[in-house]
Length: 294
Image (cartoon, rainbow, N blue to C red; front, side):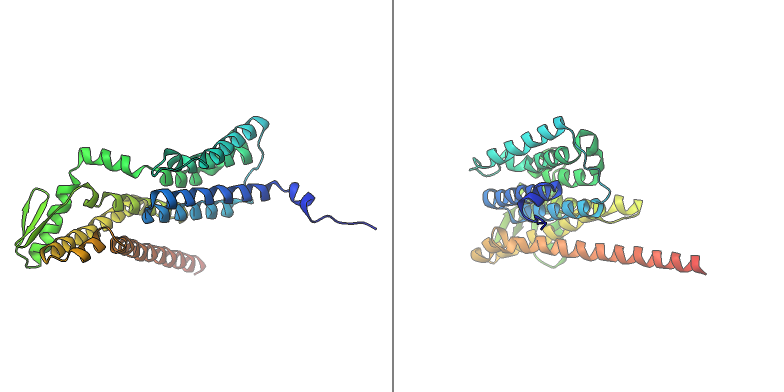
């Protein structure tokens, strides 16, 4: 009688299953660390979306990937992942550098273990997704503020929104002044972080879907512009809440759950734009196919 073993021995000879399990574990560790220690819903959401896109891209090409590593590459990959797992047990502070760069370690470790140094070139799109995920928003924001006074620009835009709406409003530097109150547009309210988030989403869209050259150029610009406009309305609302002495509502929309609604609005508008572009491209492809058949 012949017995077929479908248990542990069968799993041990399937490296793909091990890679999948290790990948899932490392992704779960990263998302948990971001949500636990950063406490930033937008950042956590971007991490989840990036990992989702990463896995989707891998699934699209998994049949054509060359999973041939060598001992040195495998050893380096295992060392990277082991160091990441060990170090993750000692993360106890917000904005830990390990949490920021752990996706890069995960990508390199898995890539080396699966395909070796020579095979990393297969993962160009995935590398772009990882770069978008680890792009340090605070550092980019600090550098951007040295070249562009976004606080003043955001304050001016919100001032004109209120002025054209008929309110008695004045602008002094970055201060929007109403007869019964005023707000100061400082770095946290300039909208730069939401703009970076929308930029990341636009790049993820370009990585996932085939687009025209002009769309690749203008879509990130439009995404950033959407975030800026929505944030301008947010600042105008903050000014009105201060003017009407509604402190509780101001706190809700400024730092509470209400602040996330504006991010959702930006994402929703951008999503509608992306859907429109996909529909236009689909219609163009159908028209081209019909012409060829005729």
